[in-house]
Amino acid sequence: MKPDIHVLVVHDSRSVREFAVQAITGWEGFAAQEACDGAEGVEMALANLPDLILLALDMPRLDGFQILGALQEHQVDVPVVLITPRDSEAIPAEMFRQGVKDYVTTPFTAEQLQAAVERGLAEVRLRREADALNQRLSAANRQLRRRLQELDTLYQVGKSVTSLLSPDQVLERILDAVFRVIGPEEATLMLMDEEGGQLRRELHRQHIPGEVHHVARRSADELAASAASTGDATSSGAMMCAPLKLGDRTIGVLAIGNRVSGHPLSDSDRQLLLALADYAVIAIENARLYDQVQQADHAKSEFVSVVAHELRTPMTSIRGYADLLVKGSVGPLTEQQEAFARTILRNVDRMQVVVSDLRDVSRIETGNLRLNMQPVRITEALDNALQATQTQIDAQSLHLSVKVPQDPPSIYADPTRLAQVLINLLSNACKYTPQGGDIRVQAWQKDDRVHCAVSDTGVGISPEDQACLFTKFFRSDDPAVRAKPGTGLGLCIVKSLVELQGGEVQVESHLGKGTTFTFTMPVAAPALAPA
Image 1 (tube, rainbow, N blue to C red):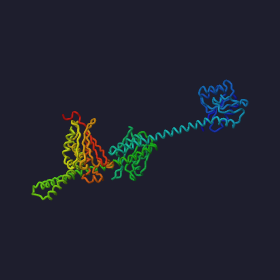
Image 2 (cartoon, rainbow, N blue to C red):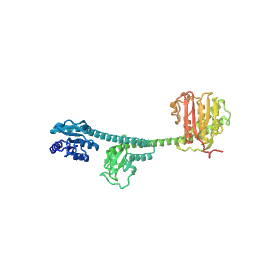
Image 3 (cartoon, one colour):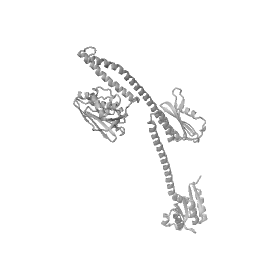
Image 4 (tube, helix red, strand yellow):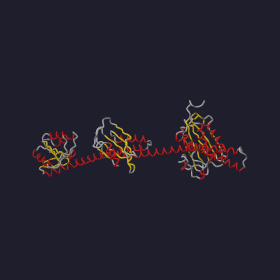
């Protein structure tokens, strides 16, 4: 066994040296060297630093004082045990300041020498224990920092992967994460064919150029099949596979390898691969569900579009015949018959609004809404909207105030759709504002945006309802709202039309005090503005 403690015996008496060396080498874990005088002792101490020096006080060439001074001059910090004659037990305090820890007087026994050496080594042992503890602590800190870094990387990677909803992007991002976190030479993502029950390779990347070697008894496909069937990670030297488990079902396998270099994968690589496999399952399942929802939503939009289209023809007929009845084209009507015909016309008008809203929603969702973007002044769209809603305003005896700059800048928008936004907001204000209330319309420019606000003194909207306000078909449970007819599509269309034209819409409301809807539109570039 390699000795832990090295003692240098410096004494001019051969018999003392031999006795001390023999005693020291008999102790477990100790080794000893000897020097016959002070000069040789200093030379040996500087050449090979010992853990302790046994030093005679009186010697030719260099005495104990001179040796201690030489060691101190060379900044050698070694504990010293003095060997002194029995009549020299009074050791000057200066020597203890220079490194003397203890002393033994001649003649001495092996037990006495060992006791003095152990006392002299007490500080050395404590220092060594402290150094060893510091090394273990440093190693633990490095390991902890590395683990925290891995966890932080996994967290960031997990957020990145699971936030994606496109299936193709998800698969690409999963392999990006594998190379970032583990750093293998190659990675493969396989998914289970639900009909055939076989794994199929969806994506494979090799980051290290070179020929792929056969590095294990089982092939990569065999390892992947084993991971899929057992539901547990499999590995063979430079290859490793982790199952993608969704509950009790395996939907695929994530595999890594170092088959170019043959460098084996570690247990740490296995743990990281399993963690990445968990993220991969969540991301793949989210993408699959999102794709299903998108398909269902698209099918619903197509259905709504077809229904809206098919309703237009019978509604046109109903309106036409009812209009002929009211005008007396087929003969005079009684008062009651005319009232019935006019009720039919009013309800057909309401149905036409609903059908028109449904078609707009369907076109927006399927991306089939065409916008005729051009420079337009907010005053033109506002005039059209006020003409369309004037009957509602007059019926409620509402007070209308309009504050718009005399020469407002042109905005880049679709004139028809901009007017539609204003009509919806004004109609909403009329519908939910009590008789004799106020409606205010304001427009102003701020930076490169034109802001337009429609305010009312109506029933207001609760904070809970505001959170759902622009959702399709949403209508508040407030009795004052439910008492008015509506489909819950108007504000959804407003928000979509504003955003499609590069703007934003916001709402501020207080129950019982009223509501303000504000939307913005970009100012048209000078080259586009009308002269």
